[in-house]
Length: 114
Image 1 (spheres, helix red, strand yellow):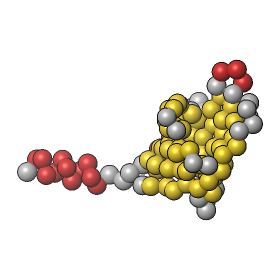
Image 2 (cartoon, helix red, strand yellow; image 1 turned 45 degrees about the vertical axis):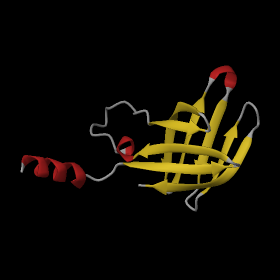
Image 3 (cartoon, one colour; image 1 turned 90 degrees about the horizontal axis):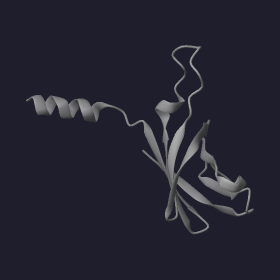
Image 4 (cartoon, helix red, strand yellow; image 1 turned 90 degrees about the vertical axis):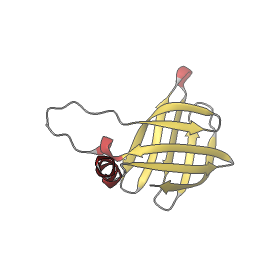
């Protein structure tokens, strides 16, 4: 009986992460938006929180700063030698990823899975 109660408690909790999968110019991209990272501060004196996601871009994975504004989702990351990658998905699923250093721009569509 305890196992049943424990399983019910586990499955009753809402999923807090949105998994975003994309096809950008034939390159698969996946990342998660952990909604709990965007919760307001409990204490106004708390320092700002870093919102982090793990991105899978083709065969490469890396940590990036997660973004969420309204129905827009995305991430940005600064790398070595001035590399800056930013990816933005609009509410309708259209998306763009841009590498500021190389000028590479990928476009396509994304889907949010819960």
